[in-house]
Every structure is written in structure tokens, then in C-alpha cells.
Image (cartoon, rainbow, N blue to C red; front, side, top):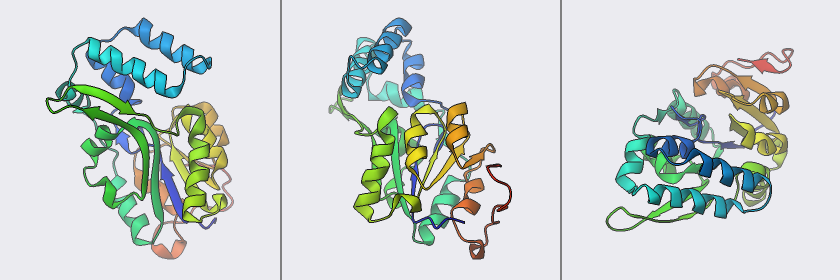
Length: 236
């Protein structure tokens, strides 16, 4: 069993349940233009606009709908914390592991499901929305690490905390987690929606209970059931 000292989590579909991507959930709630959304997405993946420009574009679509903070909060209201998250984070924190987040989600969605997230996570790289006094959308501070750059983010965290990449784990669920999964010493595809992420990950956990990842992150003497060393890639 690999020694793990730092664990990095994705948010949407991993820590946050009831969504695949928070951005998409908000767009659907506000009924923004599907064509405009797809055009901006294609422009980004073609390398013609930056991630920050893509984020600004989507914010403009929200503003065109007259959306305010209240509307965005209503859009994410059904979202809940993934089952077992508090127990898992608490167990890892109690054993001295460094917990972090790299995500293309939005800060207020994390705060909605886990208001005390700062008590668990040492670093959180996520998009941060800016609002005015009346709740108007002012702008966004984009995450420096999303889509193809999550692996770079994990490398940054590895150096910052003095933990070799082979002692870092990454837990994610979708295609934009692949670079981090490849960089990590231990990669866990949780509630996975990407066949490629499943292929490149060391462990695939299908059950939507975060506690299922604990046996792969903490020693057997912790009380968690250790994984079968002869099972190869485990599908829990």
C-alpha cells in the first residue's frame, strides 16, 4: 500500500452531489443560449480563447438573463454534500494528511454544501465569483488549474507542501481530472463519468459514498478495511 500524505479532491460530482458541472447546472436553470455556450466551449478547446475568457463569456450569458447572486443560489439549492464526505475528511485530517481541492467549480457552491470547508482544506483552487452589495455579478477570479492544468496544480501542491507526487493522491470523477490522475502517486476515480479517467486511475470506486476511498488512503491499523493487494485495479 502506497504511503499517502496529501490528498487532492475535485468538487463537482466528487465532493458536491446532485450535479455533473455546477456551471452547466446554472446555465440550465437560467435557460441561457445552448448555442452560445457550445460555441465558447469549442473556442476554448480549439485554443482560440483562454479559460479566463471562457469564464467571462459564460458570466455575460448569466448577466444577459438578469441573474443575481440570489438566482445563482437558487440554482444550486438542490445540491448536497456527497454521502460520507465529512466522515472521510475528518478521518484523513485526524491522521495528519494534507487535504486540498483543485476544481473548475465555483466557490459559493462549495460553501453551500460545506460551509466550514476551510477547516478541512489547506488549499482550494476554484473559480471565485465577485458580487456587488446588491448581489449583482461583478466578475470572476478564474481557477489557475482546470481542464488540462489540474496536473500542474497537483505538482504545485506537491512542491508547496514538500510532499513527493508519489505520496499524493487525487480523487475525481470526469475528463478534466485526467491530468491530475496521471500525475498523482495514487489516483481514485470516484462516481466516475469518464471511461478514460477510469482507465488511467489506480482505483475505481462506483458506490456514491466517499468513505469507500478510505481503505486506499490510510494504513490498515487505522481501522479501515485494507484493499486486496492481489485485486489489481479495484472496482468498489
